[in-house]
Amino acid sequence: MGFAIFRMQKLKSHVAMKGSLKHSFREQNTPNADASLTPQNERIGAASSQEAIQKYNALIKKAAAATKSGKIRKNAVVTCEFLITASPEVMNQKEKQEQDAYFQDALKWLEERHGKENIVCAGVHRDETTPHMYAYVVPRDLETGKLNCRKFYGGKKDVMSKLQTEFHAQVGKKHGLERGLEGSKAKHTRIRDYYRNINQAPSVTLSAEDLTVQIKEKKFFTKTRESGEEFTNRLNKLIGPLNDAKKEKDRLQKTVKGLERNNADLHQENTALVPEWARGIKGQEVYMGYLKDFQTKNEKLIKAEINKTLRFKRSKQKSKSNDVGY
Image 1 (cartoon, rainbow, N blue to C red):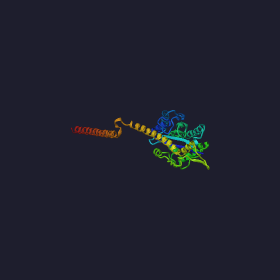
Image 2 (image 1 turned 60 degrees about the vertical axis):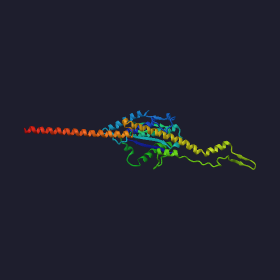
Image 3 (image 1 turned 180 degrees about the horizontal axis):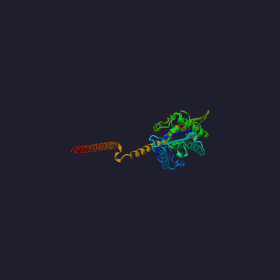
Image 4 (image 1 turned 120 degrees about the horizontal axis):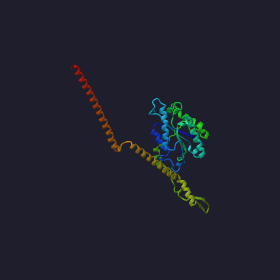
């Protein structure tokens, strides 16, 4: 029996929401996804990241309108991103109909918890190693309409542990899944671990005997040796770990290249935020110097205006005093 897997991540900005949606809708390079299987992915509530952003913006406006100031706090959690799946060995054994039933019950649980109107969108990824559902929720208080993620997922440290227990009781258990281990320290693989795994491969030591045709049966006058096919099969079993390691290395290298392309795209987007001539280390120094000079000039202009005003007031006061004396 496998475990129910339920994760939640808090997003605090429009940029974070947009970036996550692009990944979910496969609108950017996704190195850990099989492009040939991407057409099997399912989308619920929105057909593109742009459509999802429109729904998200509408919900944020409603949340802002519910506040006295009409604005959202800068540090507010604007979206909760959920990932729902099960242990790979169990999830991959389930028929598509069984997977869909699990995901539908999970989405229904989120709708009952947050209100169907606050679900921006959801979907199922079938182009990765393990099928999983994603969902984006704007955490609006069902009573006040304001953003209030703390009410749902704040406060005590064990709030997420209790949430896991609740999800298992109402969704996972129904589909033959166990609750995840409480207090588990499991972590996702970091990018640098990909590099380390690429450079680590199992070693196989072959003896002279391994490379010699073996005698299967020995009689008084005759010897029966293994056939060429049997020798090849035996050798392939011995060097099998190396073949598996090569396949894994090729897969990891493909993943790393994809991540590097994503980083390059992000760098390009960030570079576009400053003037063209200000790119690069030297350009940034010039750009910062330009800003500093601009600030200095503004300060001088302000001081000049203040002095001009003061001189005008003094001359006016002096003129009045002369009139009175006369």
